[in-house]
Length: 105
Image (cartoon, rainbow, N blue to C red):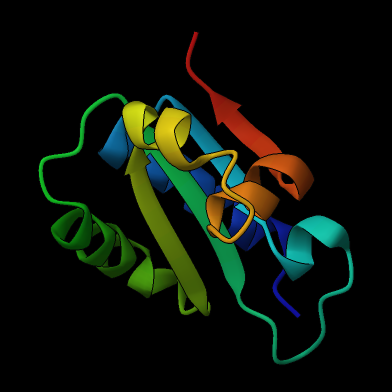
């Protein structure tokens, strides 16, 4: 399993490099039912996102030195407003079951 120190370090890198409005940990690590095969799932919410795919790849590369399995979903605040209540979207469980690890003031 992934040590909490590495999760904390990942959040610090995401805060510094992405300037997010919010970072949410979701999935098995948020629920507490992770196992040896689990990855870390982060939802990174930014005020504006030019190119979601490029930003997800960029952030994943920045976390690669930590050598942890990680999935990063990057969305804009507007996207959350539009899709956050849609039950079939990945946002729906992330927003309800996830743990907020960072929120901009």
